[in-house]
Amino acid sequence: MSNIEIKVCDITKLNCDAIVNAANNSLLGGGGVDGAIHRAAGEGLLQECRTLNGCKTGEAKVTRGYNLPAKYVIHTVGPIYSGSPEDPIMLIDCYINSLDLAKQFNLHSIAFPAISAGVYGYPKKEAATIAVLTVNEWLKDNSDYDMSVIFSCFDTQMYDIYMNAINIVSKV
Ligand code: AR6
Image (cartoon, rainbow, N blue to C red; front, side, top):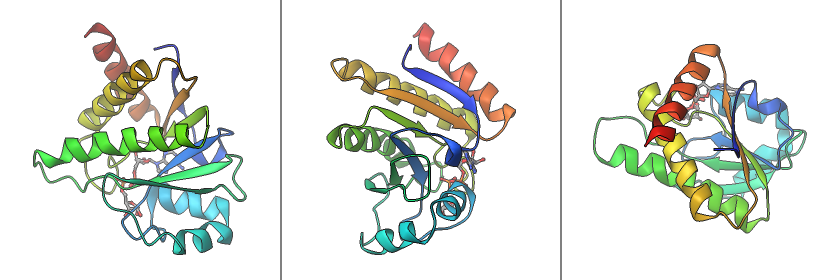
């Protein structure tokens, strides 16, 4: 997993080709990481988001990064956790569609927050394991393409959860 890094950081400060936003279906901003990204990017981001006609759960759309250090923002919408079998399927889609979109735009570095693991209530360990497994599989399936992935954790508790997930996945 040489292309995966886990960091405790504010994702809005990262100088990657793209940062991923854990958005809602409207794409018009909200709380959590979504609010932080819109505040840091400025009004231009909201204006571009208004042209996108929202985003379905599990899908991803791209905008420019405006005042962010990141060049692009990939907006994806995680599932609101309900305990149904659909939840992991939609969360997996968020990671795959974000990475596919980054590749389509010829981007080579991307940072993810813990999609759905905040307001949307996905149990943190499960969300982190799905994130690590899915990204690891995507990197294997796209081994001819150079992509670096950062998992941006907002606190050390989430960092520990991701480190455990990496340890579990690397033993599989
Ligand atoms: N950098 C990195 N991670 C962050 C940051 C940050 N600046 N801020 C928060 N987090 P959430 P969700 C972490 O709730 O669960 C919004 O209102 C946070 O600690 O942002 O997918 C949207 O508009 C948590 O671990 O996203 C939607 O309505 C993780 O990011 C809804 O929330 C995700 O938490 C989406 O909920």
